Length: 324
Image 1: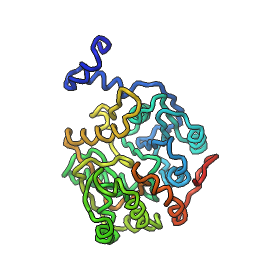
Image 2: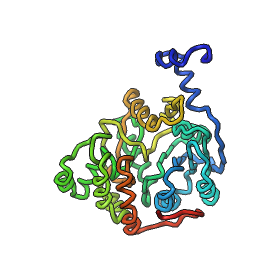
Image 3: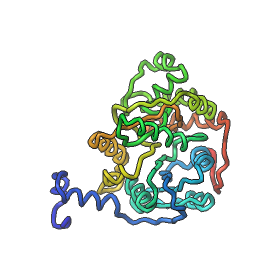
Image 4: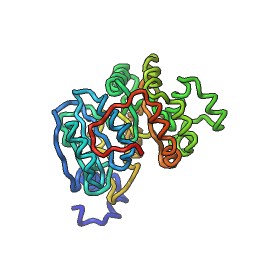
C-alpha cells in the first residue's frame, strides 16, 4: 500500500493510518547486525557510541565500572561497525548492535526491541560521564516521582553540568550561580539558546566547577531528594524511561534518509507533551556531559584537565584506547 502512494502524499497526511504504518516500518526496519550476549534482565542500558573514541577511556570505562550486574548492556553504533566497540563488548560480555544506515533512532529501537524482557531502559551517549551509584539512584528517583503520583513520567534524567536546563540547578547546589551570571551575563533555561549550549568557554567553566568529578558527584548525591520538570525541550544524552512509554509512542522516530541527528530527541520531547508525560530531572543524581557540538573544540583543549582531576579512573578492558 505504501508503494502505491507518493512519499509526499504520505508525509502531508500525518493523521492517516498510512502515515502511521509507514513511520512504524521506518522505526524498525534496516540492515543491522546484532551480537547478543544479553542475560534476559528487566533492565537495559543502551550506549550510543562510535564517533568519539577519544572519550572512551573516561566515559565508557566508567559505565563498565559502575553498571550493576542485573543490567543488560548493549553498545550501539549507527552507520558503522567499530572493531574497538566490538572488542570492548566481547571483553565486558556486552551485546553489540550496529546498523548499515546512520539512523540513531533506528539502532536504539532495534536494541530495545531485541531485549524483550527489558522493562526499564537507560540510554546514555558516549560523551556522558557517570559516577558510582548512578544507575541505582536514577531508578530510585524515578520510582519516587512515580509513587508521588503528581505526574505521569516520560523519562527521567540526571542533573547534567553542560545542559541548558539543569546547569542552573547544578550551579545553585554548589553556590556558583551568581558567579556564573556575573561572568557570562545570563542565567536562563533554554535548550539551545543559552551559553551553556553554544559557548565553549561556558562549557569549560561548568566543567571546572565539576571537578574533582567524583567528589562533586558524591556531594550532590548527599543532598536531599528533589526533582523538577523541564518546561522545554531537554537533551536526552542520559535518560531512563519505561518500555511501556516507548511502546506507546511506537519507538523513537526514524527519518527516511540517513542522518536526522536530534530527531529522536525532538520527537521524544514532543511525544511527552502530546501524551501528558513529564520530563523529570532528579537533582541529587549528577552526570557530566562533555559538550554540545558548538563547544567541542574548546572542550577538547580542556580534556587533559578533566583527566588530571578525576579522582577515580576505572580501567576498561579495551585494546587501542588512547587519551587524545
